[in-house]
Image 1: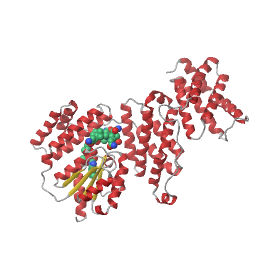
Image 2 (image 1 turned 90 degrees about the horizontal axis):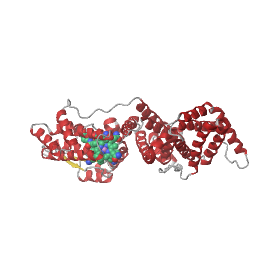
Image 3 (image 1 turned 135 degrees about the vertical axis):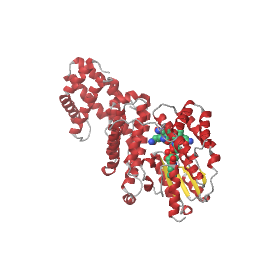
Image 4 (image 1 turned 30 degrees about the horizontal axis):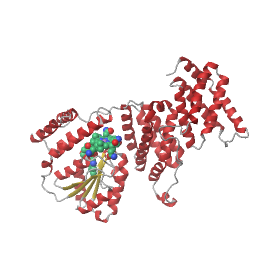
Length: 508
Ligand code: B12
């Protein structure tokens, strides 16, 4: 935090912002005219803006964390400028010019405080690499576009924009982190060794953004941003950080992509920022006593959280013995409890270990009901159910398989993350009527798309009904159409109905 003296120095800097910028620009110009001044023909107004931004950052640093904060500002500004092709030396020259102008215009005591921060920034620029521990120091040049031009023209605009985001990601991700840290150097200081996470997050944001743009579904990215915000704030981070970072992503995209490709991702980012700034809405518990079987769900959840596996299993067994249909236990106990476990993890009320433990108990509870799941009259139909390649969540697909089994189908449940070709071979080998594919995260959708396309291309699967489902399809109800599937349903019970209707409509 600043001191009254540093606050005065900051006030003075801002009060003299115009004259300081003029004097610094004058010095930079004079140096450039000197025989060894070098430099190209940059736009003067742009450079005035840059020096003005350095003055603002210097004043903010004096009020807040002082020289270390200004040093972070310089580091990330240099990274960002280097990404634009402006050498680090140009920033160094601007800081020198600013330092001399400050020395000239501010009272010695105030100037000394500003000089200390400026020197810290200057020293930081001489360090190489300047931004550690994250490898933000070099922003690679954009790789050349692949594919031939004619093909690119033929592709639809959304896919082209998504592809451009993916190709530009290695450049855009570090650039956006640098830009965000440059705007909020206090975050860089506070993150310390955790900065690498910020770069990782930027890559995830870009993956999710590309998926949403490709599917032309802003809500997918909006939902994701809400989720990230809730997770980050549960770690005690300032909600304004993500807003700043998404804004910086939009700006980096505007720099890295041509206007016609940058338009959609920037619009999606702006919509997500609007959602985030509209106010924080707490997610209510998924387990409510007044819901159907709500009291049982509350007791079951309590047993999970208390680590009482025996009680959890007994509660389910006794309820079924008392006549509760197995399907209702799935829909009103297991599913809401799993969602609640997720919410508790997301809000840091339980650890990853507790989530794994609770999920394992629910897997055991499901298994103890199998004598009842596998005793329906046979319907003469066959289902293959799987989680798509990359999806480690297997319970959704398992629910779907079990509901079909309870409807008398022969089911082949493949579990988590199955490679596309293996799924297709299994569908053919089992002569399945229906393939059910489960996705959980936005980033799984490309694999769903690829699997559906592979099924369509394989003559052995010509008559197979392809259903897709899972979280993203619960958020955007007609998403399945864009992925080329035959249908979807928000629940496992709904999936059986949709499959039966589709097969009946085909006269199969
Ligand atoms: C258990 C769990 C895990 C376990 C899964 C273990 C296992 N054996 O399955 C593990 C630890 C592996 C895991 C990992 C991760 N997880 Co997780 N996980 C969960 C959790 C708590 C429960 C999932 C579950 O069992 N759901 C119960 C089933 C029954 O629900 P369901 O899948 O929605 O299925 C129903 C419908 O969607 C539909 N349906 C499903 N599939 C299909 C298919 C068809 C064809 C049809 C028609 C219908 C249909 O019917 C089903 C039954 O009604 C959820 C919380 C949640 N809200 O789901 C988080 C959750 C899904 N995970 C989450 C995250 C972030 C992750 C990780 C990225 C964490 C990390 N940093 O590593 C990884 C990603 C792994 C990956 N690559 O896939 C987030 C996703 C947030 C988001 N919006 O992006 C959630 C929502 C947690 C949270 N609240 O933050 N996870």
